[in-house]
Length: 418
Ligand code: DP6
View 1: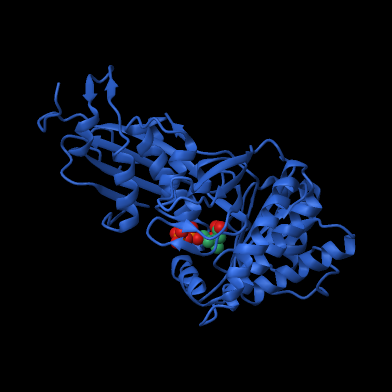
View 2: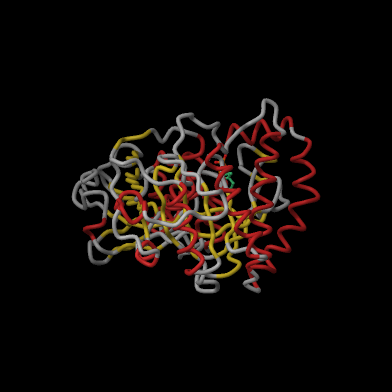
């Protein structure tokens, strides 16, 4: 039977999608509208238990327009990127038959039906931790399920890409490559999984959310300026990245940490060099970021082989990848000694995520941080308050559907935020 406005049913789907951190960076577009990059990139998906977006999407004949709420606040869907994702998903919608609820939606009904979307990040959106990547990936994944879209994950990634480039890599867990593609229309610019999260599960990730007063240039604007003005970017995209991608794939395949770390750090540094080569120059890292680089570089050098890799996106936060748990514990001790919290902090909100690493480091209270031995790398100097908080996590899985109604963000009867 046809969809009719008097029918008051609401159908909904809830999904959870991770963020990702690039180890070979995406920076620069060859097509702004379709979001096609100038080089391939590779990322590690972060455990959604600690960093993820949850999105509920719903449809009802009673809805009069598409609406979206982010962290409880209504936001506009009029932007070109939202519109691209909605259009692409709608055009692939199929028949849906919910026998239990007695709902039948045909392929062509989807053109007339409106959706409500509610999204929530389990981490501070303002911290600069790839919230748009998880957000667009989750939106596309959830709508794909709601509308019974019969495309594989890679095809969905090409849609998420049109919301935010890095979002395409959040459709998979583990290690993911975004293939830049050749097609002008972008049909072959999509993500593929290189290895799942179990492939290299010794890795531990520590994120330092660095305090910063200044508002950074957005990735979109920054990379546009870089493409227009940096010759170094052209060299990077043509000569450097293609070879680096092959080496990184090999390092991941062989779980070769020395090579993985060397490539990750070098690529992050080249990305920031390309930003500096932009006119006007873009500075994403600050003194705290530079101190963290120094600490890790000196430690790696003194051990004779890399223990920790670091990488920085379009902001001052450091993402550090430790070769194993023992190394991560030592790293956390060095970081906590060097960047202790302000005296009014509490430990529970200073180290987030997998707190068992904190226990391994022998830290059960703030006083334990003050009792840590000085790390040899940076002569025991302290920079109190320069890191807002740390997050301990690991490589994680890709998107999943949530079936527990208590986790839905929209009211199942009204389709409005709970
Ligand atoms: C530095 O994906 O945020 O994090 O495609 O314009 O939305 P748009 O940009 P975005 O850029 C991410 C850049 C980066 C590197 C990376 O994630 O590869």
